[in-house]
Image (tube, rainbow, N blue to C red; front, side):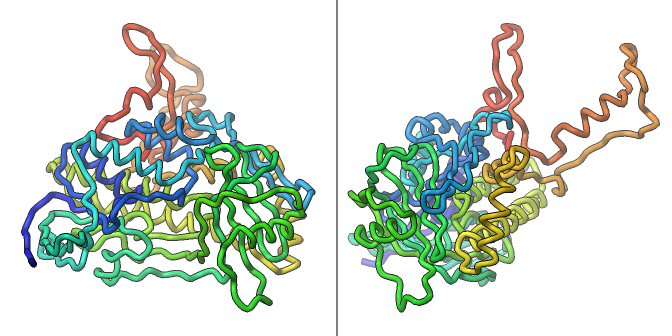
Length: 474
């Protein structure tokens, strides 16, 4: 029997992946009324996006789930680049010199990341409404009406949900984006990739990533938390081949021998296999009226560097607190304009930063391969360069210095003491130098260590601000 329901909410979130779940949790912990729907019958059961970066772990610490993920993940501390048996580069991911709380990349299946977010959501009184699909949406002034179909096989209900704000976190094929007729500008890479989660009976270090260069494309091996279990990613760039075969244990075993020269390691126990192509696309607008896009609905790119899920989670973290202030009448709606102003340049930068290494990894041009193997890898081996590269990968260099929210005042150079004066608050030249070398307005807030008063017990700013309603690392 067909039924039509009409309901209201402050915020309707479409898509319950990591981005949508983060958005719902962040809104609920600020006391807002929101609904989260997803057309899938159940949460993700596969590993999908593996890498959780340092910046995202800081976000999860603020949300209260970083420890749970770390306990279930694997700390990846290096990348090795090979050409057959020759080691070309070792990149240190254990970046202790950066003085951050999470100096590594955490390998943890997306299914586990989603599980921890769902547990947090439930503890906040929320739920994921599954088998519900957005069909259409209409905007009328300050409200959105969403037409949602319940795809449960035992029902046939169409629901009209009236909401102040709607957020599309529904992935690369976003129905929200399509309904808004927004442009998803970009292109598709020529290469096809094979992906598999398998067991390997080898003795390679299990806390490091291993990459082999080959003329027909790279062979990439990423450790999974379970002992002996690894993610394989293989680019298939052999243009002489008529078609790319489906991923299989036998094919991967053959390609491993060809790409790495390893004739003894056995691939077994495949948990998940897939063929896929990668895209680089960016939506032309993050907001239309009362509707926003976040995560893969707004940007998709090469998986090199594992930036996608992390960028989406940080999209949600950025938008949620601003939306909460507006809904609670504590800020003007103009605050919401800073979401696109801050986050779209980040996505644009990620697209550029992942495109270049992807093309270098998969190039069949002999000259480019020479530059990559003989010059670029030598440059990346330098101790001066590695921390800069790792900081980029870990997303610790993201800043909003150009945001309208970022304001600095330094005063006139004329108001400067040449020498320290305990009786004066006027800055000295040393004070000004220290100010210039410290964090700027719009930079990531560092983890400052301090003491509680009056107990003098040790703590950190991150610990003190945990679960605060305003972010410390936006």
